[in-house]
Length: 278
Ligand code: ATR
Image (cartoon, rainbow, N blue to C red; front, side, top):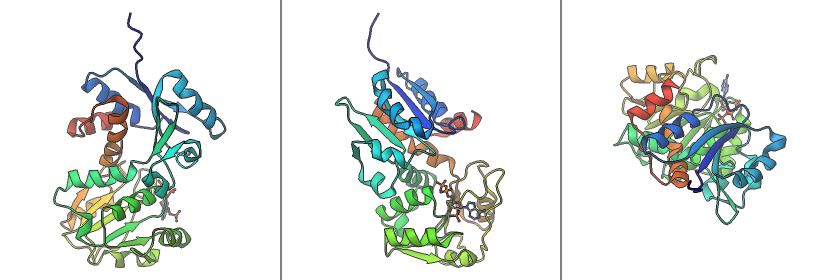
């Protein structure tokens, strides 16, 4: 019997049972006929360091990281990519053969790729982006938009201190608006993004006066349960192109799968259906 190691990968979180990542990576392993396993592991904060030090000894080549560990894993990594450092969080760790741990964040990459696939003629350089929310997802998306050359980000968040802090950190391309003026950010915006958790099943709806929205704008939502949020439906009724949030989840997984299992996976309709059905 061959004793060649079968690559193992995981997603660490608490809770972790809702994560779609095991379904997605397992599907790609089957699709490309690759050896490997990808499993969810529930890890409490107090055990994080022990688990991360132990995984490579057990044959794990990397792991994704989800809530609440995305920030704290940075302290456990030997190297951190520029984008993960800028975002202040990582969503993937790679356990290298030399024993070092490298941390990266592909959430912003997943966001941009999702829009590029969903609307091939869209460019973040086309005009201002109106962005709602100032949490962890917003940080990743702001970093990616600035890196991709967006001229201006109009930022609105319910808690003003959080958006002010992002302005201070990310600089002059961010303009702050009050939550009650959210609709004013839409005038002339070419990209419109909901990064709040509003619109998700069980939460309230995300509502913003949409009179100023141009039908040329591309509108997207990071919420993907439901896929067609009311916000996206209203934008579509106004003639806008819309891209749902599921693709961000799928595309952020591509660099990790390629690095760990050696094949660049395709995100297509079958991939979407597998994840939706799971
Ligand atoms: P994530 O890491 O997924 O972005 P988060 O850090 O909890 O999660 O951020 C959630 C975002 O949704 C925040 O911008 C939050 O606004 P606050 O900073 O004011 O909390 C926003 N959000 C959540 N519930 C909201 C609500 N009921 N009304 C307005 N904004 C809300």
